[in-house]
Length: 467
Ligand code: ATP
Ligand code: MG
Image (cartoon, rainbow, N blue to C red):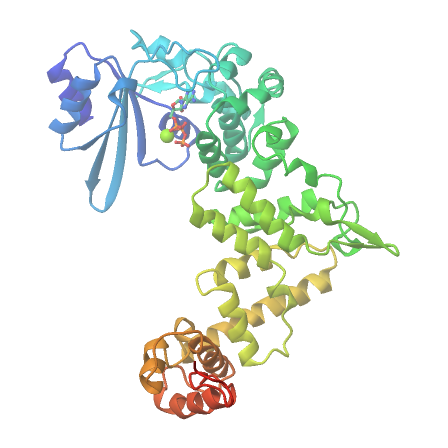
């Protein structure tokens, strides 16, 4: 390993070990990651020199915390290396950030790690594994177990509560019982860490290969109460009979979540699409309804994501998906081309793909024919949008004459008279009566509208006295 050689030239006594995810994945026989974490006895300054000496583009992850990162690009693949000086953190429970003291040995460093499966080190030269907490055994058994005293580890850094769930869901592991009990007992400590850290960790779980299992674990272990409190409230809200017996909104939501492709806004929308069902449930003459759960759900989703300090674009995207999630399922083969155009315009060209994916995933009814019928109709809507797209550009659907054109045409300044004409012309484009961008055909129509709508209100009305 070249970094090791470079480091040895700077400090012959320096130790360097692979740690964390790379070693875990190697033991599991998972494909090699391009994210390498290493631990060293060398000081950050020395590490930085070694990384630069072998051609790494160095970025500083906070020298204070002892981590130096570097990017290596070769033959189209990018490897990110992060080297951290042995840690012996002095955590103060409840503090926002750990105070880091540099430790003296690999043993100290491994003892500071969160789970046994993440506390295995490998000597990059000999390949030898250093595994003081039997992480290999836990990998074999499929168990997530805290290093050392579980309650202490979670109090030190409550983010580990969520990390445990992430590893269990991603690897399909069980959380060992002492660790699980400590998670349940420490759950409220989640409220003491920044919403950004919670958000980022939740996102990793949501984008993983088994998001439903992650969310189910969060609820079982009481962590959802302190990160996504509206989600466990979906439990016990029964769906209409068509969704299959004993299926509540919670299990439906989890199914939808696992059925969506791993795109961030889409996964959030899947998790939150029915979030307002408990609040809107009514039983009328034996029939269950959730009127308005889409609109109320949009408001709730926006609140939930804002509480997690999500960026506004994501909040907006997820909010719109939740608000619109019933729309594609209302499609009937009878829609005219203009109805399809109107649908795309309302949803937004940028959101349509996610909305259709959500609609496809949302069909979890146990009734096979019904499921097939809805799936067919969503596929048909998709095909018709694709077909229209080959003939026209949805982004260009607008009045052929813009405000400036109209001001020139009528030799008039800006004012409220413009909008009604533009609206009418756009309407005609949607209806297919006027081609997008056809200014020539639009001009006489604009004149007729101008007269018809009585927009020329500049002349004094008869009988009115100007003074
Ligand atoms: P991934 O494949 O998701 O990157 P990882 O195990 O490499 O998994 P990282 O977040 O990259 O996870 O962290 C690298 C290593 O650092 C972990 O394996 C663990 O040993 C240690 N670590 C990270 N965060 C914490 C924490 N909050 N508390 C204790 N140890 C941690
Ligand atoms: Mg990693």
